[in-house]
Amino acid sequence: MSAITEVAIVGAGPYGLSLAAHLAALGVETRIFGRPMDSWRFHMPEGMLLKSDPFASNLSDPQDFYTLAQHSVERSISYHESGPVRLDAFADYGLAFQERFVPGLEEVQVISVVRGDGQFALHLDNGETARARRVVVAVGVGPFQYVPETLRRLPAGFVSHSFAHHDLSRFSDARVAVVGGGSSAIDLAGLLHERGCDVSLVSRRADLKFSGGAGSRSGARPSLWRRIRHPSSGLGPGLRSRLSADAPLLVHALPKRLKLEFARRHLGPSASGVMKARVVGHVPLLLDRVLAAAEIEDGRVTLSLRGSGGQNEVLHVDHVIAATGFRIDVRRLDCLAPTLRNDICAFEQTPVLSRNFETSVRGLYIIGPAAAASFGPLLRFTFGARFASRRVARALANVQRRSGRTASTLSTFGAPAGTRV
Image (cartoon, rainbow, N blue to C red; front, side, top):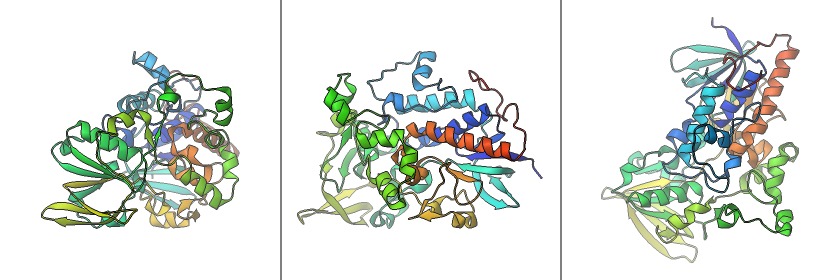
């Protein structure tokens, strides 16, 4: 039987890596599984720009030292607080963070987590079974892809989710419809157009929204009154955004229905302001349209669209990309055994978490976007990694201390460079 580690982390994105770095500094024995920055490196389109500001795009280390800005200085990379963050630059920063703070990352996938005898067994795709007293699920949005029923009926070769596309070159000579009105849809439409694709954007929204426009990133200082009415935060300007960023525990104290609606509705679909000039006037925008039907005719997809005024139109394309977002549902956490998923207390299929991110299953924690229904929209963004990793790391260290198990001088990662343990 394999040795039992104190904590196992499933997922190696910004949240998983940040938590591992904090646990290492606290001397909590930890194993972390997954490909580093997987979603950002393999599931987002090349050339994409992050919607978040540079200062809000940091992973979290115990000293708050290795920021995106510090990484850029050390690597002699151009960095501007007033400019958007490129996807490739952010992914490279995440990899450098992993190499520095989480060198013991195991690049294997967790197939199933099973609970029994006061511990968890993690079955890995390399045939090994790892054992841990506590498990933290930090899998990001990947398991929660949402495709409307109308499109789910199409054969797989004719429809895909935006999460499936990093390399867009396969669409250079195709006619594509991107369905959606948020950042993924707008980014994809603009990037596909720039690669020579005949692309149209179809959205039920009457208007597209863009954040971080010229005013917010131009460096111009807003008036005192505007700063009072719309204070800045890592989630953008506004009182609700500032509350979300500064007081996630206050959000946690709200009634379940209220905080779930807050997490869903605040900071709704929008794209980086930089994308506006690359999309508007270049990509055909079929706005205020409902997708009524989709079927295959003569080897192509026929989309039947209905406008709010009742008018109907038909669009013929080779492929449809559903940039229709993600819907958190604990039943889709395939890394957990079905019996374990069923034991998690949920509200409208979102996990109900304690103030320390623990589920109703003792010893099982969830961080990242799946925790947004408990802590608010902060957890939908990388900016929330600092709050989550610090809080969970302290809680896990306290559990270890109360149990009487002696904390290791270092975790299994060893001493990460630049970190005092």
